[in-house]
Length: 315
Image (cartoon, rainbow, N blue to C red; front, side, top):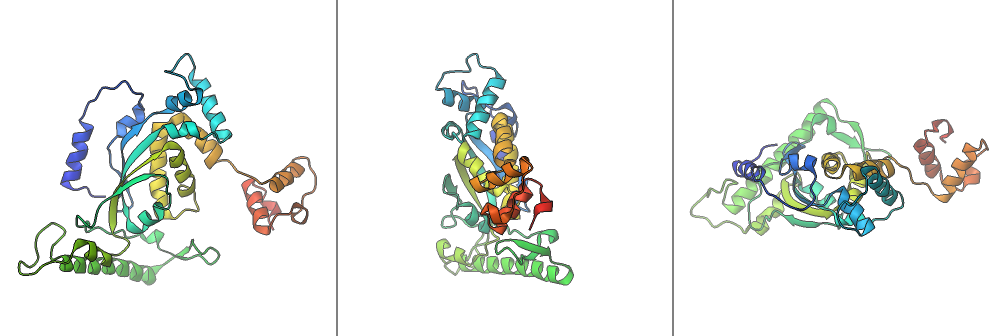
């Protein structure tokens, strides 16, 4: 990841600020506020603002003022109760804002989560940076043979090199054409004083999807956790998962009690259907349970057995 001089100076200026406030804050998150956390080859995330912390959730749930006389362990019990019983509104009382730099193809996947306020870098107004995402060799994988949206075995040798060369050459060629159509280089210099460049809103259509974009992304805590539950999961695409994993760490610094409950009940927990529950109850009691009697499909049955580490019962 490489920051421009302007970006680096902006971060230094922001981190040098000292502001006093009567609002609650999160000391651990304050330590990394504005800091650019590297993601992939040129990307990053940084927390630029937030509102509330664990006590804000507790206050909203109790509709009370201040910390009162409640103890931390009581607050933790309440937050776990809210998480366990899907009482979502108190978590909506906290908000966080990120500055994120990411490849366009990941941005288009990310924007499917329609529960945030987003302001993206305008390629109608400005020229996009000459930066492209190129996967590392261990992340160049073939198409999965049993999952239409997953990866299979890692490509090897000459084939892997050929793919990387194609990705790089295509990105560089289209960006060169982008500059030629604009009649302007990414550093702002004019290529030919005697030509008029194409409008930026038109020239951008030629760029590859591994070109980097940036945005400000603001959401509440509830919807952040919903996002992370899906995108930090091992089934998620590797590239967006790297962002989600880094955001999980900021969640831990921001609301540590909520983070613990989230990891316990949402990330580490398992939801089961009524039919699946009946199967597990029978097995606990030492009774026989079969897929024929359960009413579950083969896929449902195997997912249930894997979730409860009953691999000897896989079909």
